[in-house]
Image 1 (cartoon, rainbow, N blue to C red):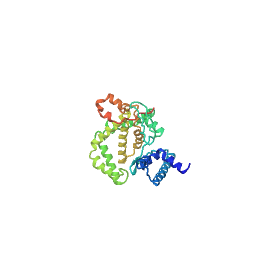
Image 2 (image 1 turned 180 degrees about the horizontal axis):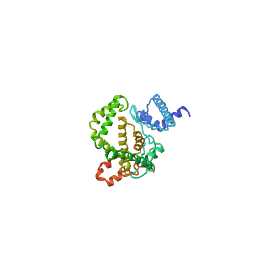
Image 3 (image 1 turned 60 degrees about the vertical axis):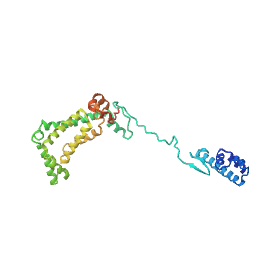
Image 4 (image 1 turned 30 degrees about the vertical axis):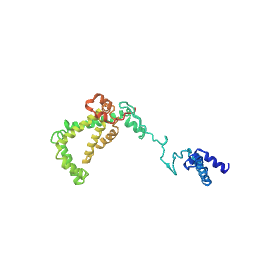
Length: 306
């Protein structure tokens, strides 16, 4: 192909036709002007059309675009100058797709794995099969708490807690304060010793009754499996209070059982009242007046895995 032939082919191409319109290079214009066009101007327009056509075909081969829309940009004739609309186009491949989060109807005993926990952890803290293990743990721990509260109300410790003006609590707090002052046992922190001195000792009478009732309530809730996670958390709080005051005793053994129960709050009470108390569908059907509108707004509790 010769130079002249290539120029003619470029000018006759669709893109060359657009360039001629932009550059007012039209045969009808020459007729209207008396066919007295300048040859130099015409050759210049032919060269410009050829270069533009070559660039368009190169973009088509390398970028996969069409000559009429280079890279998604269209040239619009605006008279002597041309503005290019460079607004980006979004293809279907670039549109972000929403993440699909599987949901499980509340009340069923199935749950899609979280994808972030270990399989054993999911089984231990989410499955209904593991609830047998937690049944044994919470019954043992519940008995310990129930017996401790019973002894303070009707048993061997009643004279120091339920009766006697809270002498047991006052003596326990005073020993913690004295040990902190002497630097031998007792409360290890000055702020805790100040709390014992300024609050616990003056209010020992009602605090002793509160502790006795609280220990019994924790034991009953654990045995029945009612709000097991909260009951274990309450027991852990009391154990920490005793340990901060300077008494280890049986408190570490309690803590070893309470921490896993808190983590297993979903299924620890499955063989108990939590099977119904944590079921929003059951509460809405049987306790509509008690739960009220809050039952419909509460976040659903994840169901269990078999």
